[in-house]
Image (cartoon, rainbow, N blue to C red; front, side):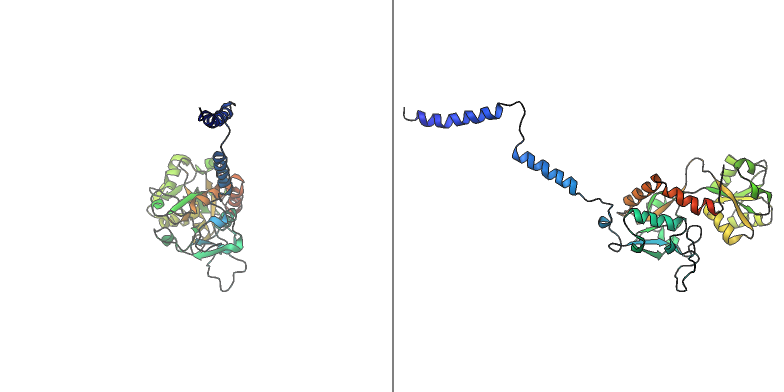
Length: 309
């Protein structure tokens, strides 16, 4: 019997250990489980914000390069006053931050963590910017309207400005005093054939006189100048250009509320840009806090393009 005490010496401690493990209904975490939870919590807490300035991959580390066409036209880019003699920019100067697109560009930059001193501007022709390939900018603003076809070549952000239609006329004509869409019905209106502008006349305004259609914008503009029509319906960017650069004594009667599918301007980025998600997040924040509306009111509505109710 000399082996029994040795056997008991082995069995008894094992029974005590088993009892200790099963004596409570609640399972105690093992040191390994506790350690894993701590590591997971630390990982979540230390995960960097992908849209924080230090996490963004820009052309130049710590800097943001923004592109625009040149000339840059008001009211999207306002001239500097005074304009430096050595300025590379014609007409409007994006660096002032004045104008619809200049203000939006800097507001987005600020949401991304960049100060005005962190921003550099590069002149890039519109037709070059919208093509596939490497870009000399991080993002680009020059009235780039969204289209699915264009989005196959480049990234296009959510909208920062809805692309309304507008009515252009001559200041000394009666139509210039119209304040609402109903007031347009009595006038002779025209637009390029097959365009959203022409459809807006026929389907929304429904004037008492048949709408005039033109093969080109220039033909419509000539008809307006010859007073063959009272008003020409075009998209709002074109309306500003016609009033400010093409017409003598021209006026924007007003912008027309978009009906149906909303066309909009997008910020353009390289296809697959890591900044696109962050730019969209910045735009969402600017919409939520009212900044985009303030910018639009300042640089569009108050620049002679009131909305016709």
